[in-house]
Length: 84
Image: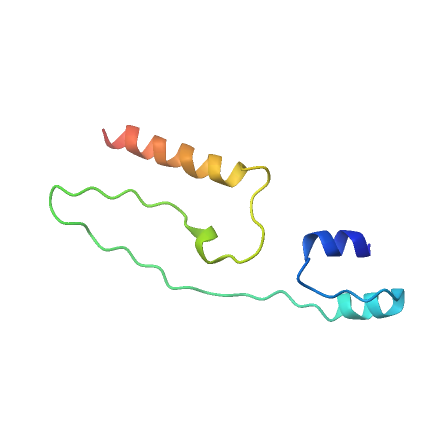
């Protein structure tokens, strides 16, 4: 369990004692952050393709073997093709 936690959350100093580890895990709470997002219409003859961008402010590890980047690229290609 400690190895798994250390792999997923390497920036946390996990205790070696089982009871302390369980107590620490029970005290963990999910942090929710809400960010206001808005869209501004571009000038005439200017085109904009919006993507998620959720990884820009995420300090922890993301994706799985590049899956996230592949999905973003495919979405961008689809958007450009659709626009053309």
